[in-house]
Length: 304
Image (tube, rainbow, N blue to C red; front, side, top):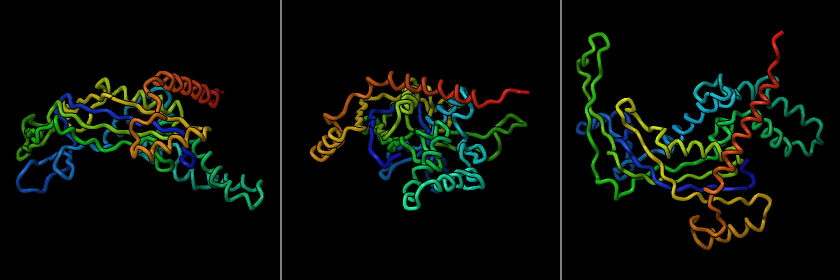
C-alpha cells in the first residue's frame, strides 16, 4: 500500500471555535487551578490533538456508511465486530493459512516474495471501507493530521473558567460535594489545520471530502460538554495541494527535485489545485458505494 509512492494530497487551513471548546486533559492534580483543565502544548497554549479531529470525522463517516450497509464500517472498539478479527487472520482456515496453501503452487524460491503480496491483497479485500482510509489494527492509515496549534493573534493568553455540578437523579438537585470547575478555550479562537493523505484511491478521497465538508458546515462538534453547547467549530480550507505521479517517473523526478530546491512542500509547481477534483472524487465514492451495495446483495442467499 505504501511501498510505491503514487499520490499525495496536502490540506491546509484553519479551524475556528464558534462556541467555547473543551478538550479535556483529565483531572488536575495541582492544588491551585481548574479541576478539569484543557489540553495544552508545552508553552501552555491551547491544543487540539489531531487524533480528536480524526476520531470525530471517522465517527461521523462511519455512521453514514453504516446507514448504507453495516458492513462498510466495522466497530473499532469491539474486536468481535472487526471486519478481520485475530481469529480470522491467524486461526484455522484463516487468511494466513489460506495464503500458505496458495503459495504451494509457486516455486519455493518465489514464495517468500509472493507471501507478502498475497497476504496484503487478501487483507485489503476483506477490510471494511472506513479502515481503508483511517486505518485499523491490521492496516496503516492513509490520512494523517497534525495536532492543531493555536493562531497566536486569535488567542489572548487566557482561558475561561466555568462551573459544573453533578445532579442527584433521585432529588433532581445538586449532589452534595459534586461542585467542580472546568476550563474552556474561548469562542473565535483559531487553530492551524494541516493534513496529508498519501496513496489514496479516488473513492477514498471522496470519502475524505465528505468528512471535511461536515466540518466546513459546522456539523461535527469537538470535545466535551456538547450538551452545554460547547464544541461547535468551523473548518476553512485554504489550500489543497494535489500531486499524482502514478506511472509517470519523470513527474516524480521533477517533484523530488522541487522538494530539495524549495526545502518545503509548499507552493510547488508540481502541485495541482485539489479543490477542482472534489466533485470527481465525490462521484467516484458514490459509484464505488453503489457497486459494493450490488456486490453485497449478490452474496445474500434467498430464503427457502
